[in-house]
Image (cartoon, rainbow, N blue to C red; front, top):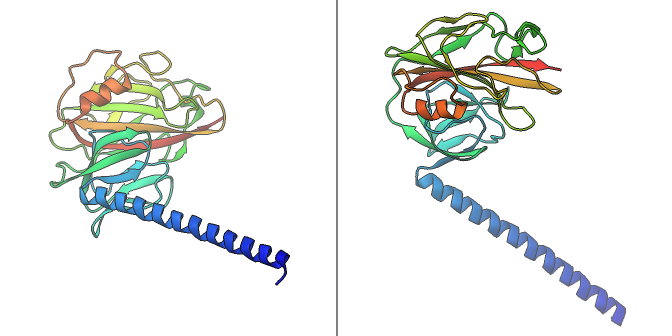
Length: 264
C-alpha cells in the first residue's frame, strides 16, 4: 500500500470515528432528555407546550382551549389528559379535569389533575354576529362603528354570582392586545350589542370601553372569553386584564371562549 493510500485510509477511519462519536452524543442527549421528562411525569407534573392557558384556572372534560405549539398529547400513565384536537390550533381536555398550576413562560406550563369534576357543567358562548372561528363583521371593528357584538351565554353553572368577559388578540405584533375587560356582569343569557354589561377595566388602547379589532395587517384572532364566577369581585373600575385574572383565581366555576377573525 502506497503512503498516499495509507493516508487516505487513516483519514477515512478518522471521519467514520467522528461520525459515530457525534451520533453517540446525540443518542445520549436524547436519552437524558427522555429521562428528565419521565421523571417529571412520575412526579405528577404534566408539561404541555400551549398558549392561552392561565395560571389557576380550571378546565372541564371536553372543553377546548387555544394552543400554539403543542405537538403531542399529554398523558399520565395510560390516561390522556389533554389532546391535540387536530384542527384550528386548539387543545382539548379529555378524561380528567385539569388545572393550570404554574405558567413558567408564554408557552410552557405545569398541569395538576383535579380529582373531582367541576359542578355546574360547562358554560357556552355564541354570537348571532359571527360563528366561532368566523369573520367578525366590519360594524364591530375599528373600521366600522366600533361597538361590541351581542353574545349569548348558555349553560351557566348553578351557583354563579357574576360573569366576567375578556376580549383579546394574541396575534398582535407586540404580544397579546387587550380589547375589552368587563367584570361583575349580572348573571344573564345575553350581552347586548353596543352595551356596557358590567364594570369595565382598561384595555390596551387606554380606554375603559370596548375597542374593536384593528389589526395592522393580515388576519388576527379575537378571543371573547367568558367566566362564570362564584362571587362578585371587590374591584374598582379601570383594572387591567391581569388584575382581573388574578382576582378570579379560585372563583371560576366554568369558562369558555368564542373566537372571531378580522383581516386588513
